[in-house]
Length: 394
Image (cartoon, rainbow, N blue to C red; front, side, top):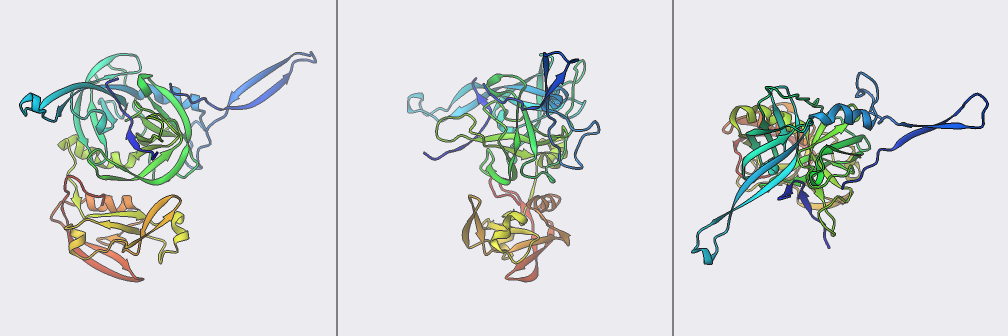
């Protein structure tokens, strides 16, 4: 049976993950025959340049430092159900509870979580590390990236904001920890590594979320909205979905986290507008890096256009999508399309660069797009449109 990817909030409602021990030292105690065994926890090996000021930390250190900033979220939700002929065609409301995770990002009471955790919520409460339960206000949400911003009144609360890092320098094999509330078990720690990069998952509204981090740190229903943390103790992602396999909805060692860079990019709009208004070019793309070397592409820089949305600004100016697929590391990659290398003269090295440069504009703005096509460089001029409700990223 084919596996499926699901969000990891718990609707209407034990995760294992032992911390690996480090070296075992046997100490000689003055010539006696007795020995003492000392078990010390090994520090997580942070990549060079990203070790905390206090040196490498163990999973225990990271948990002690960061778990107080992780919160348990409970949302009372109301959803419209389809009309039944027995109800004379009148839609009815269905009430329930959604639970998930979130994390504090500042002393003003701002909390990040997944949009699907609070979807349809009429009331949201958060439980802090000291077990205090307070009501939270939904400041904004963006279903296109599955990110939501909550806020609690900070007066009288002992808030412990987490440090936000970046996923831009993350590499496969980097150690990570996840802290969340799987199945309602508050502030549970799991450990793992970054298993893959540049994954793509579907947002609640059907849009694609790009540059997603894949991890084998155990993530289960209830972990939604919790932080994925690197070995330096910084948040690099927001845990959002899992691959379920064919046996149920529990962890099979494949979890997905939206990069924290995406959240940092849209936070100003969530705070000021409650939503995200994006300019729209109308392409989905794939970053060209070393992982694509086996494809023998004509360039090592830029983003490879995978699809072009019909009727989009990109389609109107003739930007071309790939015409055939080739598998690489289990992924279908569209080949034969344009490579976008710049927007308004600014280099596009990653799909994130493309999204950021386009999103920095308003709909109606005119931009120049530097394209490599069939080995030749050309420039096209596109008038950006307002982003539809369900489109591809870019």
